Length: 223
Image (tube, rainbow, N blue to C red; front, side, top):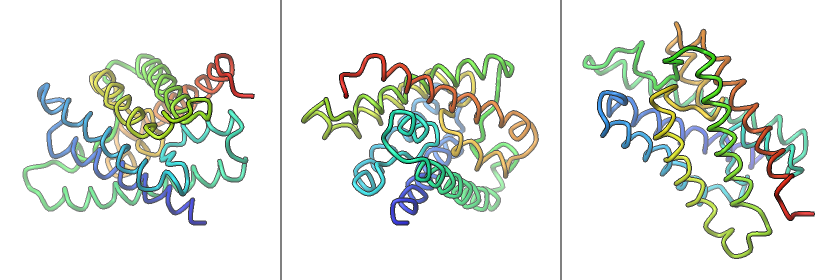
């Protein structure tokens, strides 16, 4: 149970700080807000990797959990429970963020929970999320691989920095999800189009995570 709770806490922190930065900075208004939001998501992952990595592996993302499961890293039970607790953590974070935003008259609650959106249509959004998640999960699988030896100790940094890059590319198109839990939480409170497009940010990352697992099996030296 401790590792499930660790995933809940980790996903809460990622969602609250990442989406909170997006809200506070008005992500998308200018280049600085985009860069700031990307850094916030990346640093949140780095912080949690060194906080709960030794407890649960710090997936804090159903797409990563799926990739690890398909790669033989965890059991089916742990895969399902990780995903459940990740979603719970993201929903709790979105609820806290929505409550905070509601007290600020300068922010509009319907657009200030950090929810994802298909800015250029669902097909574009789906492709972007599949490709970016595939790249991200591939980094996770490689950085945490036992074949990396001592460099494994720096996996948290590699993963966090790669997430910054992923956001710098994806924010313009979808707001960047690459994480179904991170999208579910805010969408439940924002509603409207965010909720209607939510399936894109569930299907896309999960497909991307599965593709990353397949690619890693092809190129990995692990037995």
